[in-house]
Structures are given as C-alpha cells and as structure tokens.
Image 1 (cartoon, rainbow, N blue to C red):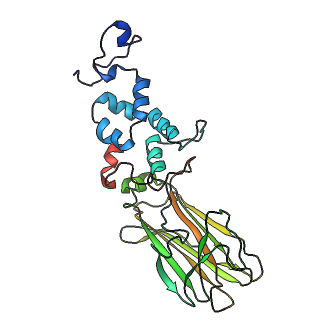
Image 2 (image 1 turned 90 degrees about the horizontal axis):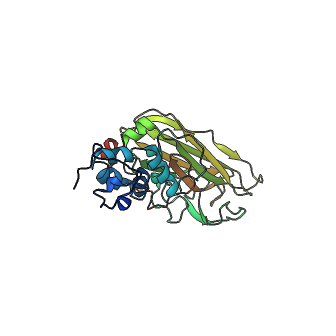
Length: 299
C-alpha cells in the first residue's frame, strides 16, 4: 500500500474510474468525501484510531468543518446555527457529555443516590404530584416529588466530575458553564421556607465557588405554583473537581406531617445549550476511556 502522507496525496479533477486506473489508496478520494466519511465515525475512534494514521488524516480530523458537521449530523445544533463557537471539537465533546448529573432527580427511586443531611420533624417523604392543596407540575411526565416536614429537612448529592467524564484540563482551561436548576412548591394551606446551596469543590473539598441565595419564604394561602431556581457558574477558578448540590426546607406552621416545601426535577448540566438532548447512554464519556488520557488527543 502507498504510504499515507501529504507528500503522496494529490486531488485531481479526474477520478480513477475516468482515467481507467484503479484507486491506489483511500486518500485519492476528494477531501469533501473523506470528511463526509469521517463525520460518520464515532469521535473516540476518530481520535484513537484514525488521527494517528498519517498527517493527512490528522489534518482533516482537526478541521473545524468536520466537528461542526458532526454536531449537525447528531442533532446537537440546527443547520442554521449562528452562535459563535470558539472550538468546535471541544463543543462537540461537551454536547456528547451533556446530561443531568443529578441522579434520581424526581423521586422515581425513592431516596436512592441522595444523602440525607437533616431529617427533622416527621422526616423526608416522597409524595405523588399533585400534593394535597398543591398543583400539577409543569411537565406532566413528572409524577413524584420529595416533601419536607416541620423540622429542617436537607438532602444532597456530590457529583464527581472525573467519574462523569469531565477531565481536569477541560474544567481548568475551557471552564464550561455549569448550570444548576431546581423546582420547589408550597402547599397552599401552609407557609414554608425553601433553601438551596450549590458549591464547586476542589480535590481537597475546598470551596472554590458557591451559590447560596437567601431562603425563600412562602406565606400561607399565597398559592402552590411550582417555581424554578436557576443559576449558572461561569469563569470559575481552576481545580473544580466536584459539585455539591443541597436543597430542602421546612414548614412555618410547625404542623405534624409533611407541610413543608416539595422539591423535584433538580438538575446540574455542563456545557452549551443544544438542539437535541443526548440520552443517558449518550451522556457517557464519548472516548470510552479514562478522562486523564483525553487531553493529548484533543489538543
């Protein structure tokens, strides 16, 4: 086989078939055809198996147009996308990884994956939506919520970014936006207090950035509509390795039972908003290997 290098790579206006000769290598295909073929190859195979083959393939795989084409092909962006993108390769990987990093956000599995930090009063409970004196959720597919009592109830999850596929160079250099969201609601017949605290932590659990808004006080008989809390961490310090998410509250009437705020549909996502949200399976590391080994392939 003819070695795959730029020195022997030439694109002519005439195809091998039109000249009556056999194609010696795949590199005799027009560049746009090679790019189309590469756009069909999974990202991790492009970087692990295709890019090291030769300088031609390396240069083609590093082209902006290839990664933009892959984003369009996989539905991450629309054909008429007009937002600026600093690095299309990194953008593609962030889109591939993007999913909700909070597990069991809507109480489908009880309290699985949640750490109960405070469990006062009659303790945490899972209830169906709508609650008594409550309202339906904005998304009819969400049927359950976590409910607090007359004593402070707090629960949390800690997201390990390396385990989730976000390697340290990505977090330290690119610093993709970290978006947190939570939904809460009161019972109409009882006042309550809702709290949320989200921290970005280092390897040693040092707090590098924090979102701790003032508690939300909801008066009795002031409605039971679901409310969303949203916050974006941007341009945060380097060394972020964990995200600690905590929320909860209590009622203000000190009634026995579960009259405090309910919470559900919590989320932590990293990276840009995209047209199509990947499924949980797609949200896994697109390279299929340990995050620490990815940087040299991306750069």
